[in-house]
Image (cartoon, rainbow, N blue to C red; front, side):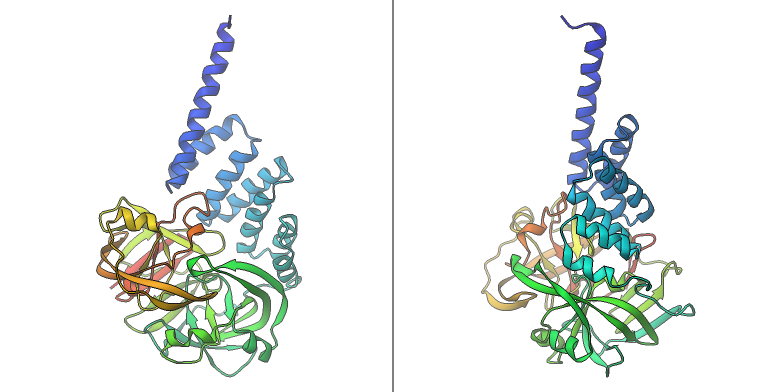
Length: 406
C-alpha cells in the first residue's frame, strides 16, 4: 500500500512527464517560445538535466541568443560529456560568436576533424574582420534574374561573378578558381543538396574578400563546382556563391526592385515599415519563418533565395496538405550535387508572414527529404526567388527580424 508521500511523488513525476511531453510537442511544431517556457520551468526543478539543458540551449541558438546558448549547452555538455550532438551544437554557438578556437575543439569532440582544422587555422586572427570605419556598402547586381549576381574579388583577384543564395552556407568557390587565387584547403566532408543528393564539399579559407567598398579578411570558404550554375546567371560564368554565413556577419538587404545588395554593420538601425516577422536560424544557416501554402495550417518555411525560375519547393507531405496536383511534364535541373529531375506545379497562394503571392511556380522532386525533420521541428518547404522578387528583403540577425519592403 502506497503512503501519502509516495502518492505525491508519483503525481509530481507524472505531471513533470506530461509537461515535458507537451514541451517536446510544442518544439516539434516550431512553437519555440512556448516550449522554452516549459523547459525552463522544468530546469528549475532539475537544473542538471542534460537533455533539458540541451533543448533549451538549442532554442536559444536558433534565436541567435548566443550568450545564453553557450551557457546552456556548456552546462549540458558538462552534465553529459560524451554527447557528441551537444558538442556540435555548442561548436555552432561558438562559431557564430567567432570564437573559432573553442569551436574547433568542440568539433573535434563531435568527430568533425576537417572543419575543426579549418577553424583552428584562424588562431590569432579575427574571422570576418572589417575596417572599424565600415558602416554600409551597396553592390549592384550585374543580373537580377533568374538569380542575383554580383562581382567580388578574392585575395586581390580581378572582379568575378558570384550568385547570391541564402540556401548556401559558407562563401563557395569553384575549385579551379580557388586554386587560381591561392585558397588554402583542409579536406572534404559530405553534404546534402537538392533531391537529397550527396556530394563532397572541400573546406578552406581565403585571406580577403572585396565587394563594393568593403574588404572582409580571414574568411572561411567551401569549394564546390559552380560553373554549372551559369544558366542561372544568364550564361555568365559563375566562380562562386555567396551564402548565408558570410551575409550574416552584416545586416543585409537583397533589394530586388533596385537591383542591389546592401551590407550594413551589425546593430545598424533597420529600415522602417514594410512587412516584418521573426525568423530563426537552425544549424549554421537554415533560416525559417512562419508561412502558409494555399490553405494549409501555418508552417515553418525555409528562406532559400537560390531557386532559379521558381518560388517554392516542398516535401510530398505539404503538397498533399495544400491540395497541390503535381502532374506537369518533368525536365532536368541542376542542383548542388548535379542533375535532378524536376516537375513544375503552381501554388495558388503562398504566404510568408503577412506577405502573400499568387500563382507561384513550384518544383517537385527537389526538396531534400531529410531536411523536413532534420532539426526536430518541421520545415515544410522553402520560399525562394519568385516570391521575394517584388521586395527589398532585409535580414537583421540581432533582432532576428525579417522585413519585406515593396
